[in-house]
Image 1 (tube, rainbow, N blue to C red):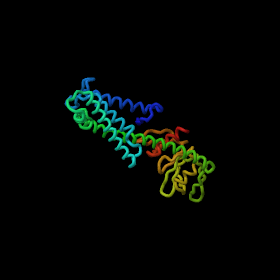
Image 2 (tube, one colour):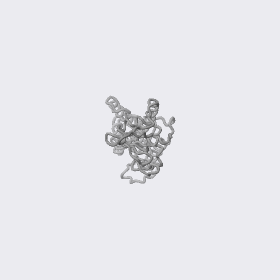
Image 3 (tube, rainbow, N blue to C red):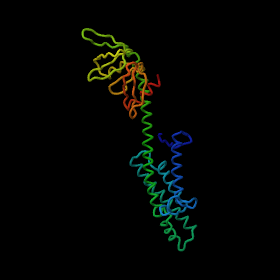
Image 4 (cartoon, rainbow, N blue to C red):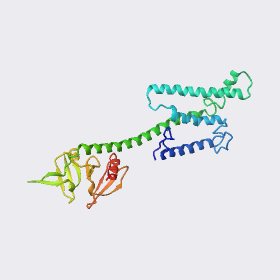
Length: 293
């Protein structure tokens, strides 16, 4: 299932968003259960995860989500990356300074305030130099992988949608521009004559070098002295579809389709039982073409 996490989930409460929300909830629940902050017993050895203050443990997922959904630039150009680096440094400095000042004032320390602040900034609760610093940098790094993988998945989904929309537009304009140019027959040259072959009797076309070989409903093959591209332009797209680079099929003679390897489909023709195969790139448009019939 394609992951999708909209920036405003209240406007787009989709199933794809719920899937990612459940995944992230389980992941971060496991994260909190594995860190001993005195709200539960850790199921991982305490020597691996240190005993830290709750606010320090809370800061790591906050940094993760801020980096993934807010701070990372949407468009990776030079100016925005400079702004991004400055923002990260500013947020990190503000958090550490605020935490250091608060803890220096609240916790019992001996000595002047600057010394207490310096010791707190280098204590185990520091996200940069403390005991959780390795988790801080690791999750910060993971946030990049998560964000870029997420954007790639979303972009792939959008690309597929755009392909389908592009096919719809092409079909619409082709039907509008070529409405009066469809042919209902082909002149096929024989030895000493020409055969008038109705398009309704043609099961499929196949490119053969510089010409096209078509097969009729009687299993007879005929040569058309034209390219497959020009031949396809003469056909009504409601009845004919180019399933790959070299073949065009008539919907009237399609008996059934079966899933084939990867994203391809196997097309079984009526009577003859012959099989044709769609290409990966044309399968989504072919499915849509069949559904619209």
